[in-house]
Image (cartoon, rainbow, N blue to C red; front, side, top):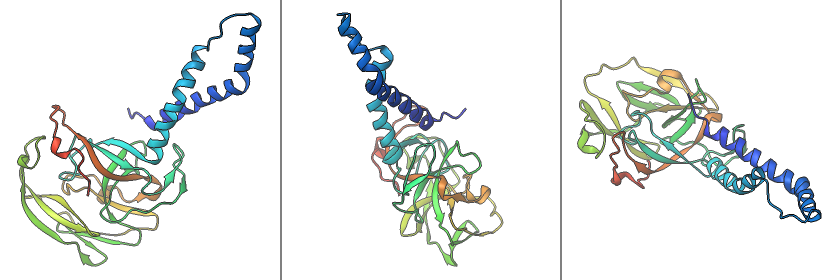
Length: 265
């Protein structure tokens, strides 16, 4: 079951705000007057007291989470070596425009995804699930993936072998073997990708990114469920750009302090 925290937070904020406003405009005056006439001590009903106390907090959290930063936890290894399972990241929610909570309607255009961005988005086949991948193609790009190598608009994307990838590359996590770390330069962004030795090359893929769509891939190229398999990401599905890691620990509570505060590139 997917826990839709954004929906629950929005509903709680609306309910608390409505109770507070209704009481302030219509109900409180009558209660105060009744207490004065009966010469009794005035006290707020529990519902009103809770609403008045929680509404400012809920509203602040909703504004920050919807328009500024939102925390996400990395659930899979599709973005290794850039992001590990158990990384907690901050996502800039305003990077690709300000959107209304729940409705996801853009109300202010700030910027657009660029090649090389690490973006969080709603999975096109199930919008209740959030995915994180790297932006490979923007509208109009022709993407070719041949022999585990990217070509964009007819130009080869630089790829430099950096040696085998092992557990020694990260403090936490399970041992890995058979994978080679490469440095890829995409849109001026240098980042590492993993390619698994001994796996056959998949058939050549060639697509042109339609208007209003984006082509996404994981940095763990042979272990990522991405646009190569389910297609493009619509612009309205974008949630924000991943910016930095604020905590990192695995299922065994192993904390990798070296990754805390690390910028995501």
